Image (cartoon, rainbow, N blue to C red):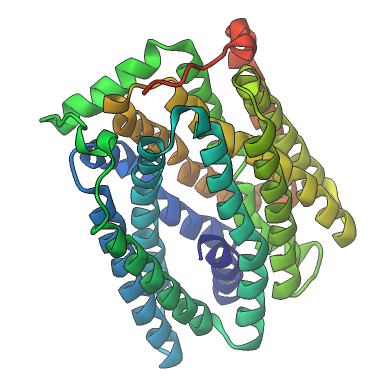
Length: 385
C-alpha cells in the first residue's frame, strides 16, 4: 500500500492543485513523523509489546483510509483531508520501521541476519512491482476512492496478522529485553552509541544524505510523467514498478550472496549508483529509457536499503537495538525536508533540473564521509547477539 499510494497520491494531488510544490508538501507530511517521532518510537518499542503496536497502528490506518474513501465518494474531499491522512500514514510507517525490524533481529539466528533482512527488503520491493501499477490503474479507471478502499482492506488484513502473533510464545531474546526508564535517556544513549562507532556514524550520514537528496525524487515522478514524458497514470505506475522489480532482484541477490566483508562497500557503491541513475533519469526525455534507468536504479536502492539495516543491527547490542534503530528512523525521517525542498526547487528552476540538482548534491555528500573515514569501505560489521 505504501508504494501504491506514493504514485496515486502524487498524481491525485497534482491533478487537484497543478502544483509541484504541493505534491512535495504532501510527501513532506507523509514522511515528517519519521523525523519527529522515530527515535522515541524506537525507545518505546524496547519496552512495549511490539506485536500489539503493529496490530493497533495498522487498524488505525484502516479506519483513516475508510474515512477518506467515503469523503471522495461523497465529493466532500478537500486537500487538508488528504494531508491529514498522509500525516497519519507517516506516523504508522514511522512506527513500523524500528518495531518490525527489531522483531526480525530478535527472532533470526545469528548466521541468518543478512538473509533475513534481504528477504524482508525483497518482500517490500516486490510490493513496489505491483503496487504502483494497481494504484495507477485504479486511479485512472475508478478514482482515488478505490485506492483508499483497497488500503482499508489491506491494513485490516495486516492488523489481523499482527494480532494473531500476540498468541505466539515470545522468543527468548524478546522476553529478556532490558527495560529502560527515560525516553530522553534512550535517545541520548542511541546517539552516543552511534557517535562512538565510525561504521554506524558513516552509515547514518549516508542515510541522511540519501533521504535528503535521493528518495525525494520519487515525489516528482508523477510530475515528470505528466509534464515531460506526457504519460497516463498507469504508465507512471509502471515507472515505479520496474524500479521495484530491480530492487526485488537486488535484494534477493544480497540475501543469497552478501558476506560481512562486502556490507559497507555494497552500501556505499549502491548509494552512489542510485544517485547517478536519478541524475540520468532527470535528463532523459524518452519513456522507454526511463523504464530501463529505473530498473537499474532499483538494484542500487536495494543495496542501500538492505545493507543499511544489516550494518546497523550487526553493530548494535540487542538491548540497544530499538534505540539505535530509532535514531536510524530519524535519519530516514530527514526525507520530508528533501521532499519539501525538491518541491520548492521544482517551482523555481523546473522539475527535471531540480531532480538533477539534488542527485548531484547527493553524490558529493555521499563521497565526503567515505573519503574522510577511509577505513569504512574495509570495515566488517560484527553481528551481536
